[in-house]
Amino acid sequence: MEISIRRLSKTYSAEGKTIVALADVDLKIAANQIFTLLGPSGCGKTTLLRCIVGLEMPDAGEIAIGDEVVFSTEKDIYVPPEKRGLGMVFQTYAIWPHMNVFDNVAYPLQTRNERSDEIRRKVERTLHFVQLDGFENRPATKLSGGQQQRVALARALVAEPKVILFDEPLSNLDAKLREETRKELRSFLRELKITAVYVTHDRIEALSLSDTVAVMKSGRIVEVGTPWEIYFDSDRRFVADFIGRANFIEGRVATVGEPYTMIDSTIGAIACEKKSGASPGKAVAVCIRPEFIRVLKGDPGDGRNIFQGRVESLVFVGDAYEGEIRVNETPLIFRIEPTTAVREGEEIALCFDPHHCSILLS
Image (cartoon, rainbow, N blue to C red; front, side, top):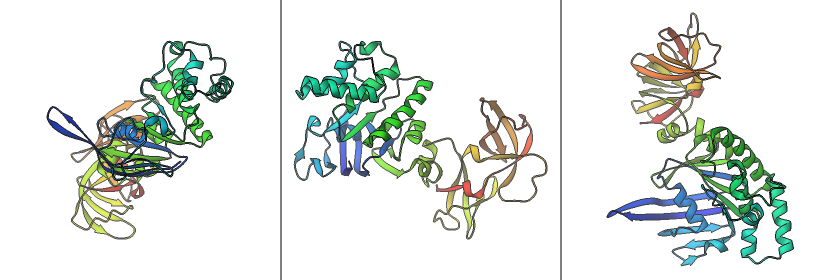
């Protein structure tokens, strides 16, 4: 089910100051997608999620879930959370310690006074879906972190919600379990064909889970796109920097033409295949991801974007070497295969493809 948000605003007062949590947010969340709100702490993503579910009252704007308007200042509409038909998984899971797994999952149905045989049928079906068959009588808090996360997911799913919302539900898990649970969660949501809104500050979660990512900053939506578009094709420095490690090389546009835009930069002339709309003389930054920097052994010959530098640092991280190369006075971080023969202090040639250069307005 589609979610439509129009000009949503929310402020708080603290210590005599007004804090803008949301500032005229406009957003369309397509039906049956995993839509992630990504951004640093305090950017407004959890406030936006809580406004959608009805746990926060916006100051202005409108929220529609499907064809139903659930909040509107203009139309004086406010539908309480329990009548919005939504499920929610919280960061802390909010599992009741005095209940077993069955009763935790059954609770939303019990509050609706459904028949006991119908409750049992739905709970058993949902526990089977999240692979917790046979756990019905276990104390919920005696389960592992990943199993507790599945209980919270089952409780959100059992009432067959129109939309399910997640507020950083994996942040309490260790790294390996978080990776495994991400895969399971994506598989569950794809099989359900349900609209999911997911909040996180973890870029790996956002990239690996989502169909669409919205990056937030200071209460505003900065950019919306697929994980690929956000990672590789963003033309905004904040987004490029937040979504992953990147090199930003300062410079000015020299020429604009086909097939390349040429940038006079601190490391020399850089050819960029991607266009930015920047005119000659405009100050820009060229963004290069570390994984796209290649080390050349021997005579590099002639070609585009070939530079000489000195390896300042080199760290073995298992599947790669990560380090820093200084070109002129500009440090560049890089990531290369562990079989590449490179040493700290070595003078080397490096290159990167013009297709992998993004031009960001400074």
